[in-house]
Image (cartoon, rainbow, N blue to C red; front, side):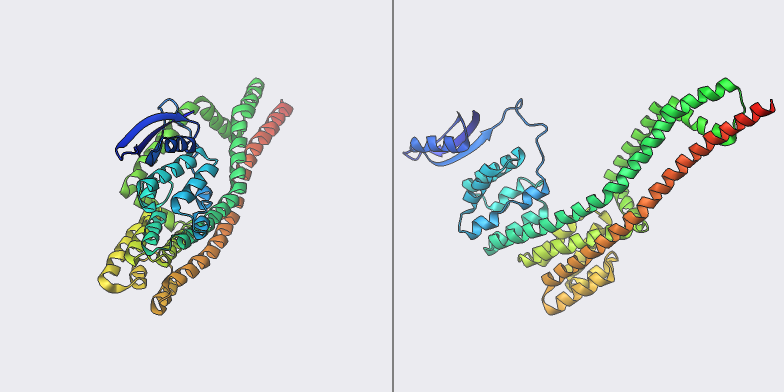
Length: 400
């Protein structure tokens, strides 16, 4: 039995409230209706001891599958559509969010105002598009467009993850091999070499020195690495440090081009969705800029937005920002001149989505052999060190 608090109006119109236990929100609502109460608002109460500290997070695909547009097109009110989705949600975190949305809608809040209370789940561009859609009366159409955008964004993320699985596995196996050699294999060979009292080659002495250092000071090494990671996190949290990191990432060969394509595709996709939903261009540009994680892009686009507000249009300030490719600027300029900016932005996003696929494949194609070469060098050096030591000991024994 869950505990709920309720606020309602009694038969004579006076407000009443209380806390009761019930099997579900629907059961309590029915019981209150039987008491002839009206204007019922129910909120589930949760104690600190029963709070789900490790509650499952709401994934992007679960937000995408909130098919509110289908209910709205069928003529169902928003509050009833949210109520239906709440009863069908399997994720407890998502179910609580939907229940809170339902409570807000029943209190008379707009859908956008309800979404504002869950900013970690619904990004700013999502909330901004919904806010504009409610004003224009096209909420069902806009929600369908949002679902399409989220699906494309999710598919891009899945492609990136799947492309990095194989190189990541190679890297993990390489590190594991080095650890096994340093912790288990080399100490046994050290005992063997010491028992023969033989002079070891330089490569073998270097290898034994490295493994001794790692084996005897692994706690110190871990502490240093932890301190470096903490220092890096503190620097990145500072705007200057984060800007420097983002700028360096954009200047890296191959990696920088891949990041740039990712940012351009996302910016154009979000801006296209917002302009198509009727959001004013300055507001759409602000929200699209804030959706980007790279601080270099965000600062450059902020300056471009100021120039646009002064009457310079969109394409020209973006060209002056210096972060957008020429192809993207030309496509946007065509959209401005022909009055089809949202369409051209969608085309631009599709073009850079294809470019992103190509650059990811290129990056993986370069990363895989690099990891294999490093792994080969490490294993080869170990093999040479051991074999040369064996031959050296054998030759010394033959001479004696």
